[in-house]
Length: 387
Image (tube, rainbow, N blue to C red; front, side, top):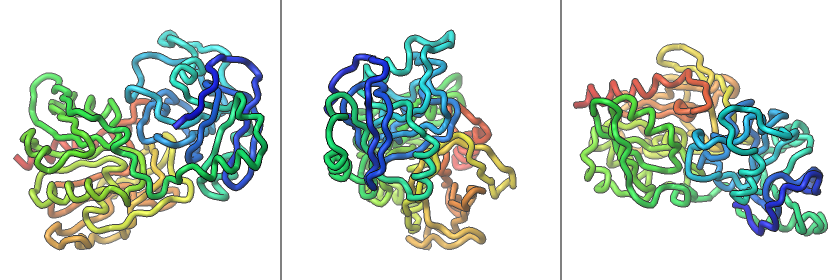
């Protein structure tokens, strides 16, 4: 989360510095609000969709580095937000657009960053920074501008080292809705789904609503009784930030869903929770997957999809033949359904004896690609078959 914002004046050329926890630093120009931003340094390889990235709750407490050199070309509009605010802690770009050029733009990107108190930096070698993170792994980072940029490097490193790491962080309740709400089905109402908000993006209930699903979005702290109260045909667990090892409450709720044989679909954090509910472990990736160009193979169809990702943790499940769920044999057989072709990371799970499946990536990605949109249809088919 951005802290100690000093100014929101958009002054060209004002100095700023980025400092990693291992002591490496980069100097550039202030971008957005002035002050201090600390968080986990992660890089996003997408060339489009920066507005969706910035408003994705899964980026809570992360400083996002854009590998695409030119950012801000299309400005900021009022239609593409995935949530009610920008969630990134800080923002790093190489060459910000001097002015937006798009008929939907309402204001420049930098103006929106400043208005929401997001401290950023521009004009640094983002390729060198990304290579450093790929070689050393993700780490904590700080962006300092305004009065904070004048502090000594040892003082800045100390500030970074005092910030909380992502491992062990329980963040979903911080970004989830505090009150339930309903997204009405579009056209004929066919099903009711209880969606646990762990950092849900606006496009997720929208895509379900388009398929005739009435979506009841529930807080992350909801109980199994709260889920049953909406009389759902199915249950959905969303994406979200933080370490899945801390999600004990969500895991226990999901185990009750599985035991009741209520159809289940999970995305991203929801995939990790399904993995834990079935008895698999989770682990932190060296630098994660973030972007819109990850190749994933659907082992059910054999097709390769270009997919959108945003995750720093993954499920530790065996590839190959199905296995009996380690947590409880009553859950039956489980298999890895999707795999990342870059590094063999598990990208999906499927229960063969229960109506439940999940994927690690984002079939709801509003900025695209849309190769995986069929997964919502697969969920609808499951709901219909379970009635």
